[in-house]
Length: 256
Figure 1: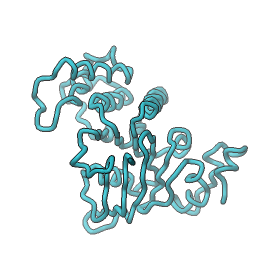
Figure 2 (figure 1 turned 30 degrees about the vertical axis):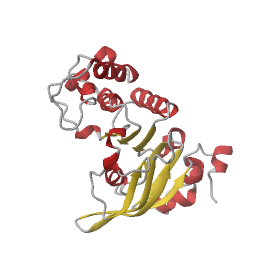
Figure 3 (figure 1 turned 120 degrees about the horizontal axis):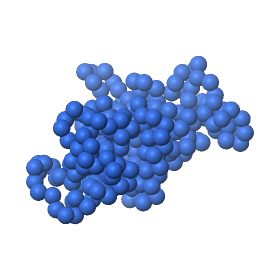
């Protein structure tokens, strides 16, 4: 069974097309990146899969089912800028939010729920900050709080919108390591990403977008010069710029 199947997905805002006939599938345990230039529809694709944006056409299935049948298996990490970081909550408060079921935000948490939240903090390296107000955190720490909340849900597939945006190198390395651990544990992770240079090392599958799906597959197949110029324009350099200029990595991903 596939973790994610997207078939003929199109979306529009105010009558203007944003996504055109997107189709791809992901196996369980994939760590996949959605990349492309600004305005290419990356976030819209993520939100359409999650049902936050209603597609104009097409179908999305998660673990062989429509979204509403498997919502308990799905977790979403929005862009950090969407959070209200002045809200009076601590790190552990936010992590525990991942254990509340829909419509029961103020219900009582069990010992198991509290343990799951603590484990999520440990995995994200936030245990020592558990009682700190979220407004006092750095950007990288705030992003890890969002991820801790998602981990506490114990989902099977995670969708993340630009988790590396606006954070320092140390936080990026920590989050990248965590994503790899999630993949190794059999979780499926799909995230919007903007940095081509790190995409090749982070993901085992890449969807390259520019309103349509330019290419999908392993990084070395997707990030070739033909595909990159189709997505980013003819002035884009070559795939050798992504894979370090010369050597076998560049040759494998070069002009074809």
